[in-house]
Amino acid sequence: MFRFWFNIPFWQRVLGAFVLGALVGALFPEAGQALKPLGDLFIRAIKMLVAPLIFCAIVSAITDLNDGQKLGRLGAKTIGMFMLTAIIASAIGLTLGTLIDMSPAQTLTATEQTEKVIPSVSQVLLNFVPTNPFAALSEGNVLQIVVFAAIIGVAIQKLGEPAEPVRRVIKSGAEVMYQVTRMVLQLTPLGVLGLMAWVIGEYGIASLLPLAKFVGVIYLAVLIHIVVVYGGFVRTMGGMSAWQFFRAVFDAQVVAFTTCSSFGSLPAAHRAVTERLGVSKDYASFVLPLGATINMDGCGGIYPAVASIFIANLYGIPLDWMDYGLIMMTATLASVGTAGVPGTALVMLTVTLNAVGLPLEGIAFIAAIDRIIDMARTMTNVTGDMMVARVVARSENLLQDNNLYQEARESA
Image (cartoon, rainbow, N blue to C red):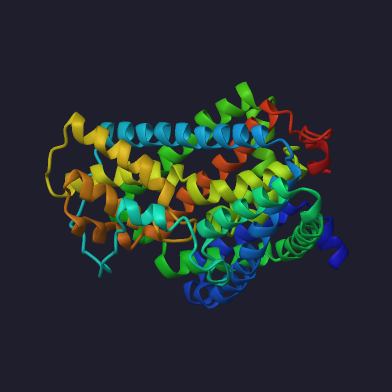
């Protein structure tokens, strides 16, 4: 039985669990809600990996990139691509939100909204540096882990031979975490089944009806951004067809869609990028955690733009071109501070609404369906990380020998 199961391609197992979970949630809502612990188990297992995996992977990646100048160039190219796609995402969201009338067909009932604490710009910058690295590791503060790991990696690289024992230990730790990750990934179909059954069983298809246009615009913007923008970059700069790329990253997209967590999708994304897109393990270990921290085209680009226009329409507040420009700027910059965990896009939306002067109470109207929208947002974020990994790796000759996705192998 187990041999038969593992003979099925991984993406087919994930897709089958996705469809089955949706059916169970739609047909048997109570049973779907009862399956939530399966999804919780999967997310807990993924969270277990995040801190040690990111720390070991980033330190190992930096120490293996012996050329300090090359490391700086890689970082500049990677962050530059992240910012470029974030600006494009905001533009797409603003364009569709303006062209499509999203006024709800019926009166909405606001849900209870928890007040969000919005940090200042200086506080966001200070939060980059941990006061206690061990506390950051234990609490899973990914941004601080990334910064601390980068500092350790650069220090080991500069010391050279005296730090070689530490480098070998961390390198071995990274390999151990990769193996643990491969083991945890086998739980993916189980987790996807539980999460999809719970989401559909809890909220139901009917919960989308009052906000159908709003949800539709979000999903349309996501589709355009993924297919046209990411597909275009992969084809013109990544050296492979869009079809090959999307086939290669499909299972990671499904994990992102169901877990609503960029960090929770790291193991699946790492596997797709290294094994199918041919990106070197060292660069993948650098770009993916970084992308999960600051690359938020869905949460910080598309979503605040569309939601701001929607809330303005709800309250009958007109927006001018200066407002649109402010929305695009704040949405793009706010994406840097968005954590890659479920739900924090609402905080980024609060930042954007504050900047434009729109009522924060409007968030309550869309909070009830945030999970459904978060699926599309997170899938966009993770797909963008994988696209940037392929494009920058090709420009820097960081592709492995088997750098083309072998479609025949996957379909066998």
